[in-house]
Image (tube, rainbow, N blue to C red):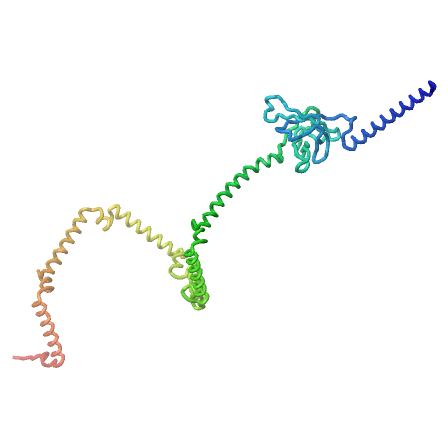
Amino acid sequence: MPSQQEVKWSQLKVGLIVLVSIALLSTLLFLMTSASGMSVFSHKTILYTYFQNSDGLKIGAPVNLEGVTIGEVTHVTVSSDPARKLTPVKITFKIDPKYHASVHTDSKASLSTVGVLGDTVVDINSVAAVGPEAQTGAELGTLETPNLTDVVKASQGTIESLNVILAKMNVIVDNIQQGKGTVGKLINDPGMYNKAVLTIDQLQALVTNLNEGKGSAGKLLHDDELYNRLNDTSAKLQQITTDLNNGKGSAGKLLKDETLYTNLNSTLKHANDLLAEADAGRGALGLLTKDPKFAKKLDDTVTQMDTLLTNVNTGQGTIGKLAKDPSMYNNLNTLLTSSTDLVQAVRKDPKKYLVIHLKIF
């Protein structure tokens, strides 16, 4: 039977072993939490945020800041507050104090998955945050990002639209195969094919004629003489344009000569003055347009002239007979003929007609 002293010594060794084990366990725990950035002896900053859906987020899930783990999720609960009807999921998480300065009140929290089918984590974005540091009990805003489920739901509408488009494409292909529509006839109708071939042959013949210089278009492409004529015409037009710009010729002077412009302007001014005088009843033209007495006299004169010409045309009066009576014309013609004969006889024998006999008593 062991003595009392041996028993005490055994109890002391057991106690020492327990104390050393506790110390080693505490040291190991401290080292593990320090390596992960979460010290059990440091004061944590407790923050929370609200989401529409937790997307499978679990307690203990990491909280990342720009890809670096700075904390972990402590609670995931559903709020019964009516004001949180759209975002009922409350997520509480704690942050290591050494990252406290990197989280601001206007930082945004979002949920993301590690890989395609990995665990859900909390991501904090402080890139555009400029607010004060977030203190314990502060609420962070959320930045909803589409997850795999949202992407699948959004793609369902696209897939349905694609199915509708494919169904319509099937109908179009069936119609084409049955020879319906323009495209269908083009593919299945031999007549349409023959017309297309004929059109292509005609186009080929047209291109051949153009290359050989046949026809108007062919000559325009290949005839050097026609090109030279066009070039000469262009040169002449250029020369005419140059002469006009230099004020040469009638058209050039009309465009460039200020004297001609001044004279034309003066002529127009005189014409305007003349029309103004006439409109005022001054001058012959004014009297003609404004004075009824002058107009009456002019009308009487015209009437008398018309009467005189009528009498002449009917053979009345001396002028009328001279114009209409053939006997007077014949007599006048005979007189002129006799006068001509007399002048010729005098010129031939002037002594016969110009001798003067002087008798003295």
